[in-house]
Image 1 (cartoon, rainbow, N blue to C red):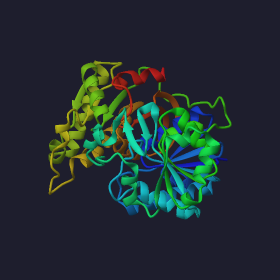
Image 2 (tube, rainbow, N blue to C red; image 1 turned 45 degrees about the vertical axis):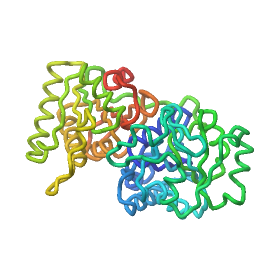
Image 3 (cartoon, helix red, strand yellow; image 1 turned 60 degrees about the horizontal axis):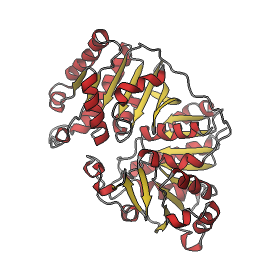
Image 4 (cartoon, one colour; image 1 turned 30 degrees about the vertical axis):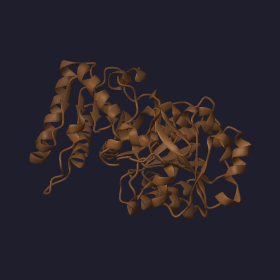
Length: 422
């Protein structure tokens, strides 16, 4: 029976955290939404040590994000979880209203608790917190490419400034000097009376810092942070088995990229130099959505035949100018059209024989998982920090699925990820 329950605000974040937990000895299941646990009466997670519920709440309206997060918490409690982890992006993606603060407040209230830690650091992916400010590969968040994010532009690096407008709790900081004194000293600092009702931002610059933070906060029923905070969570199965691939080398594969992040744009550029590729056109989708999707699917099927061993790349953004199209007054905005189109492509391509899918972008990943009817994911081989293959079953078919956050992965991930399945 699982004891650790996690709530992730998007699908790539869920697999990111699950990968960390598996690597540290936790038999881990990713449930797609709280209903996936209710529908199966706990059977899918009976032998798990940890369960991660994947939501699509990062950019949802605040009320919706809070409601689905509380539903996830209640579902996790019903299957036996007693300690909880709210996982959000290591770049603290949110709007001035939320959703990190409102969801944290709601989870604390539901648990009858008053405080938690706030730890977005993930040094393996270049995210660190020093003096309460968030850095991305050594740059302040506000100077990083995240300042151009189309949904959650991040233009302030101070976590207190980002969080205070979102929460009913005071926001406090525990600095690196205290962290470096060790877990016992840090726990004493966290337990100080003046922090009893606070959301406590904790500095962390190295993996060792995160292990210290994890050890010092083990007594808290709820922690919040990026996947890096799991570095200190050692599980009961030192040799935890990863799921075997569902596919075989040579099975049809595809890359679907909806992300506009700078990392993904570099990956798209590399993919265009090495893979058959086709760009989505939002105008064509508006004019003839079904016909445009059919053309994309036909392109991928032709590529399987003409260039075997080279997965076709279908992408939405190569340059920042590709996302600067204004919203249409008489139809969906481009990001929504892209999600719908790529998820429709995924469903049609799986029907046509695709058994390996690499999806770039948190919102796109959520749309694809929903379109495929996936209810649970079994974590398989890692690709790079924060990215893994997972065995996904939906509507009678089992496929290998990699859900990549827009900011994660090396430049050649679209061409190199497949070797992890061999």
